[in-house]
Length: 390
Image (cartoon, rainbow, N blue to C red):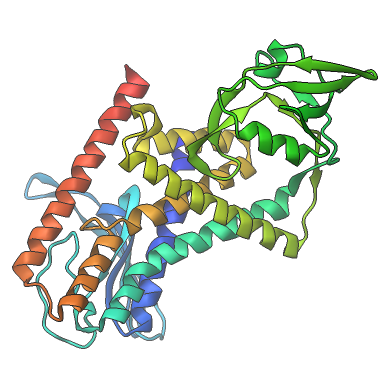
């Protein structure tokens, strides 16, 4: 149950923030938002704001003409004076996303009812359209920053106790352990290069994945020379998973440093930058074919990760939320029809050619985009089914 709840909360927050960005941006340039839905159809709840009342429509299974159908089962009305809204706020039964339906936009619904009214997105200029379509991505990046800043405020930051190159721990079975390097040893030199700080040692080690290097250490006043063959791993320290770095299998001593508000903001900014680099390098690996089936997954994999993180505690769960929010931002920016980036690309191409594509052409482009996305989703789901159940 915790896995399901964690998944719903994770996806719900990320998607809500994304769609809220589209909603606010659309309203800011005078575009009518016809529907704001959290969750996917069939619709479960609709909230309709009228001048003198708010109506809540609830949908469920209902027997109509001796057939079971999904339909409205009741309406709850609250009398109140307010400004009526053109937007229906809804909740879908399936907690797998959400959407904002704007007036006058050619999206995955394939609506073609453009009237030329000033409150349609199609009637706005290129800058206004791009602002509306990119607002969801912007909000996801902001969410990533806010979540990372919150983590900094809650949990502080792990910082080195000292800059001295003294080994605090040794990974069992790692390169250092295999050649007899021990906790408490001080690194004097690497490949005959004198070492004064831990950062100097780290930089040299990172440059030699899978290489054998000479390590001179000081133990109980005696100099000892070791020649470990370094392991290789993705450069997670800088977010460059497309780069391999050397690993000695040792760590320095660190301690937790509480962060105030300003410190948490700085931590949030640095972590947001790191996560952006991580997503860029991950996409680079995907497009160059340097990933395996084990490295990619669908909503099933996200649910599993969310559940494990929730069991580990609040901070791990927030950390996963921040990373997936940044991931959603970059995925949506891809120039694929049906994604925000695809819509933006079409607008830019129309601006360059000085006229719009025909509706028929745009429908074809949109259809191709939907085919690609649905095919990718099917592949990822099948990949996860094989991963978890076979």
